[in-house]
Image 1 (spheres, rainbow, N blue to C red):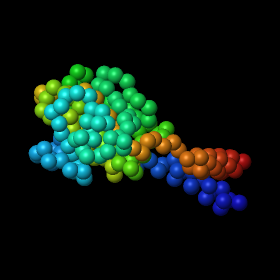
Image 2: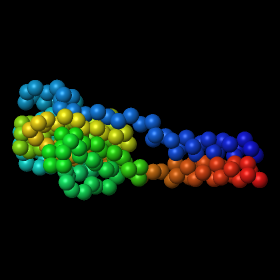
Image 3: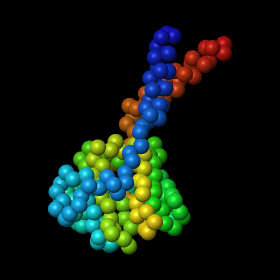
Image 4: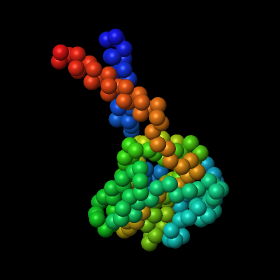
Length: 193
């Protein structure tokens, strides 16, 4: 019986700590290697001087990804509020942030299995918009955006687009977590008796 309780406690602890070791993804304009207008699907980054707010059609034209595969899954405005699932913190200055951190709130996440792009927009400088292919992102690692429009611009908003939608924790994962907590409680109770 002790072995089962310890096993349940260990599994629960592992479930609790599974996201503690996630490494942040560092993204900056230097990651954008595109130097001309010949963008093809599979390029890691695209840019445009079109300062209008990107939509599925304009992103499709830029990236070659079908517009039907591009739904806005998350958006945060500098000085505004966040969407669900993530918290974005803009930094450097309150009005001209060059950096942003998109952090998972651990209540569901974006599924990028079918592809995702990250859009970083300023609109007053060249390029006005950066679009990064983040299809390999697991939806839980922090996205650190650094050095956008240094000394002359600001990130006005960030958004994540894709076709995968969002996921919520599976009932099995939650049950395993509950069993782990229950097992740890039993171990503690036996130790104090």
